[in-house]
Amino acid sequence: MGGVTLESLVQGSELVGFKGAPFPPAVLNAAAESIRTECEWHIAPLATSTVKLRAGTSDTVLLPTMHLVEVLEVTSSAGDAVTGWESMQDGTLERPGGFPRFINVRFSHGHAACPAELLTVIAERAVSGAAGRISQESLGSRSVSLESGYDSVSMAVLQKYKLQGAP
Image 1 (cartoon, rainbow, N blue to C red):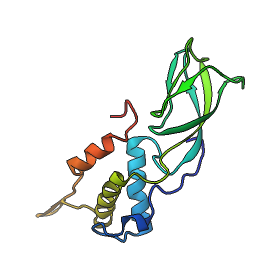
Image 2: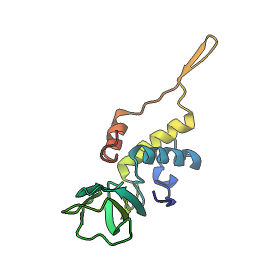
Image 3: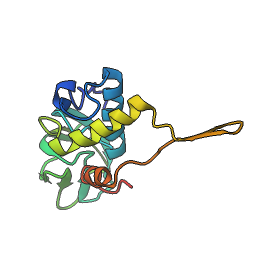
């Protein structure tokens, strides 16, 4: 997101008591980053991002967030301030009459801390990452398989954090 270095989504201390904890930092970070990648935004903690968007004269644009805190600045590609817009917490910006073709938006977004319901999903992925999740591999007459799926409850939780239009 605009070259911003993001803080970790979760700290190991937040997962104390979960199966498999404590997790090695590399495993924990990989699990958390897989969730950010899948959801297509950073989720937590609060961050300031700048994005360039093609508005194409539309009166609605979607910022890459699902928890908008504040829009700090909207400018045209020429650097002129764009005014008269309204924002919504889901990351939607609306401007009657449309936006310029390209806009730059600087905004703060994300949750102050990782949402509690995501902690279980992160712990599940960390356990899987630490274990390797092997369940299918063939070598001669020997066969082991690799698990690729996650719990359906975890997938339902993640669906709530995916950007609109993300599969």
